[in-house]
Length: 208
Image (cartoon, rainbow, N blue to C red):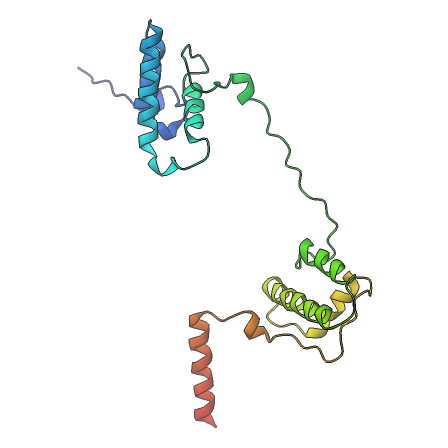
């Protein structure tokens, strides 16, 4: 006598696999209950079990509401129960996602970002003096750090100063004698890099 095996490939696909087949069977059984109060009790029991499966998610916003939404999905949106939240319909779930309104800012130097350019334009409006010069230097150091992050291991201060003048249309003039932080100060080395640097330095001393 041949034994018939029950493979997942022969079963109906799960609507929400993360809850497993046993939860889906509970939902199917709940729908078959003839009494509304029995269905309400079964629904609340299933929700409690679903919540206990992922306790780390209980602090998430609207977590309980999402559980009831998941229950509706597993029930094919065919639920005749008293839910504490409005349950979604199949039509609502099939609506395409709303388009994300991405910014269309015309950024001249993408490695600096939009905020850097905006700050420079605001600084350009400031009165000339020490406060303005100090603010320009702080922004320039941040620009140098971002340049090093996205472009190359070294960049001269003059490149940063030139970019500032270009971004502001010449409204900001770099004070004579301004110097920015060294690349090693802006981009701290990792422990292994520091170890290799000290090793090379000690080796050079021995050779000398």
